[in-house]
Length: 69
Image (cartoon, rainbow, N blue to C red; front, side, top):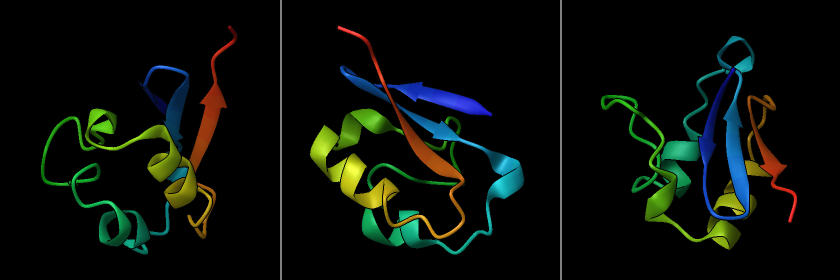
């Protein structure tokens, strides 16, 4: 499991769950690029865009962890 923090949330990626459907890359190519490291660049989208995309992950490999305020 890897965590990619942003201001009020983190993107959590569980590689063992990933089905490589490519939905993340299709919906937010400026955030997800499997050819680069780190492959998730959460700074390239708003929190709202990230939340909307993560909800569409079919395998549940991507999730959101909200930071306590």
